[in-house]
Length: 349
Image 1: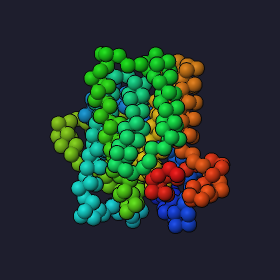
Image 2 (image 1 turned 135 degrees about the horizontal axis):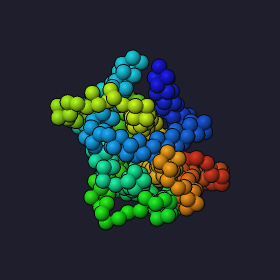
Image 3 (image 1 turned 90 degrees about the vertical axis):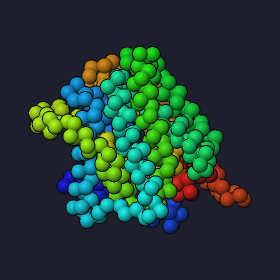
Image 4 (image 1 turned 90 degrees about the horizontal axis):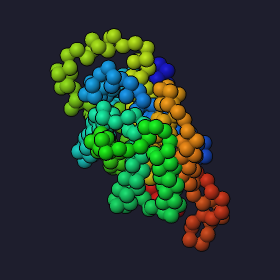
């Protein structure tokens, strides 16, 4: 029931921006909640790499992937049915795009992370996902979904500098090597698929409720993997032998990183532009490396803290916009506030 209340709260909060738009845009409280929820997403996705690496000592990548998506689909199905919301019913015109989104964001993205994690350290895997903001900004610009303003470009650049600090100096495993090339290449498919998923999903969220949409896509994206159960007959029996640490890792991967993470991501995408929300990906390696230090005993360096501060500054710059007296051209002047790019059709004024 606790999980249902959290998802229900996400659903209700997601409706608030729609109401806010009718009165001139989302309220400051709604925007604050959206940004806090996106911080939670970055935290849970950073934890996901550590948890996945832990379980990969016991299961192979296909088993971790199958277990994660199947349990996430069951969680979503139970919540949507018990809450009376039901599944998102896509119109005939949207069905092809919905299936494509499920394959990109669920099947391909999670498979790339799982199989790549077998070949590279968790810290490196969490760093690779930071390619997502750049992919997202370029794709959104090419498709005309948003204008890449100087402020957004500056924010991305600052965050990327922070990422480089974490990459080169953040920890003993936070660096690329030639021997990791295959794992890096496989894992890099994930952020590219997620960028396409984020940009293409934006128009659909004007027509579908975020939690229903996230749950439905997760279930659709899991279906192609179900035949793997036939090749893994001992998987269920192995799960029954899980200890507390195994269950904690699995809960982090399923409930926090996938179920709540996807729901909150969609809520944010309904309010913010694709570039604004994607910049939060830069925080994933910071949280991932910090948690690796706390849970796995890896050393936390001053460079990691410096890189994290630069990334956070980039997030703030990307998600702020001028506000104040309105000029003759209809643009606001003066103070800066959190920007709701999506409330203006995804363009930063």
